[in-house]
Image (tube, rainbow, N blue to C red; front, side):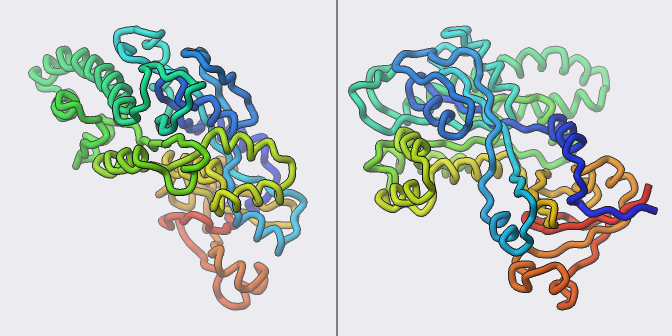
Length: 386
């Protein structure tokens, strides 16, 4: 029997696993709304940003670090050799235009790029700047949102109508799976015909939910509306952002305000103190980029559990709702196959008592089995045999 702790150095294996489960957020919007500027702030990969449409043609992909203050605080107690934060992928997709669903502006290519992502960050221009041309001549984020929504909805309708004809034949012949798919397709078609997004549809049965996921509809993806504002509106937003917020609430979607150009200026400052001073002058406690990354991570339904030892303090990514054996498998498949139990310390307890030994002595270390649903921020050790 072999006992192992999570901080065992298995980086190469973990990287292979992460590549297999990598989830991506796609940044979308009309041309010249600030997508590439925002991407540049988020990622070390630099997308070209210029004042003309279709500046971005091939999607830019960046791996971004997820800010997590918990790692820093644990490191102050553990004094590890290194801190390893969680990451996620962001994709900067070229600007869509009216008619994209019919191929306008290389629309089919761009829509295909969106299909490959797992969630959407929809950037809306909520600022005036005579030096930056708007593709439609005037600033109206609600109109812009409607243009993007319509193009994605039309593409989804094309997908659904293409599948319905042949699926209905199979359903009529008695195929049970086909009957489920027909019901799902018709439910989606009904809302899309009303100009609504597929994500508003909810299915009751597991069969329907599985079928819906396999369709990979563009408007079924979770969305975060990002209102790009001028520096003066970075804290409180403006009338445009408030109207976008109302629409997002109706959809059950999230919305946030960010001043992308200002965030770019902050990112260029070298010292932490200078950055914090800039934020204080704007009346902000945290940068918009940090808030956006955290929201993007949550939008992908991702959480982190933590390992803390002398070698490293590390955040490990897992899908919300996973049980202990699945999370053990994030480190190595053998951890999942031979899972015996998990030793779990709550983050707040670790901070309160100051060390693993003190937590154990206080009786705050929990021993959990195969049915334990891992919680965000859990500090874990696994025991397994091979």
